[in-house]
Amino acid sequence: MTNFIPLITAIVASIFTILLIWQLLNRRKIHQAIWTVAMALFAIAALMEYLANPEVMGPSGTLIKIYYISAAPLVGLLGAGVLYLLVRRKIAHIYLGIVIILASVLLFGGLSANLSEEAISEAFQLNLPKAFRESVRLFPFETARLPSILLNSTGGIILIGGALFSFVADRRKTYNIPLLLGGLFPSIGGFLLGIMGNADIFFEFELAGTVFLFLGFVMSMRYLAQHKKYNRLI
Image 1 (tube, rainbow, N blue to C red):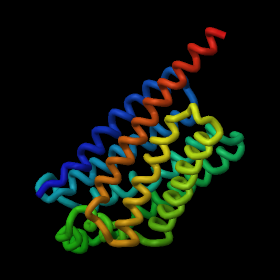
Image 2 (image 1 turned 90 degrees about the horizontal axis):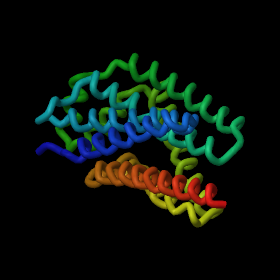
Image 3 (image 1 turned 60 degrees about the vertical axis):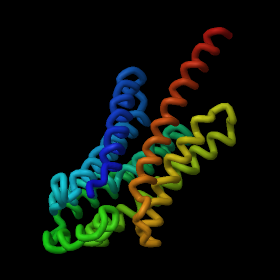
């Protein structure tokens, strides 16, 4: 049975990316450029998840590689974008440099990995989330999975912690609540899948994270527009 949830996630992430591009062209902020790249990668990764359905295109080594090198760096990039909003640029520059280095190692390790088509085909006898989990384990640890773990763990902490800190510092910035949930839901889904082996709601958590990030972005745009009008009045 075809799992359509990744397709919905890809559509939401694509719309989000288009809005980020529009905002970037109008405001030209570095965090917007970083988030635009991150959400574009999110859309690509989710599309690969949908295409891997046996009834759609089916899995292949190339598809799994595109998925992995798209999905792995995006949380680190989201975290880097948050740092540019919260801390000194020097610190944000350092973390972004680390993200780029880790993503480069991952890109090389992911593309050069020799993935067994037979092992991939066997993995996709399982349900779709578990199939991706087993396929990801085919990548070499040092040059692919380790950089991915570092990117996801540090980026997730910064994204969730940054949204929480910003809300506590200024309760008027309620858009930080959905941003926090947007970082939390995929992290919980990934934990349940990767550590607990529970694949039943992974894609649902991934979709929820995308929707909450999108909602937080829209709310932040409304907040900034109102704040700008208020500044003009005073």
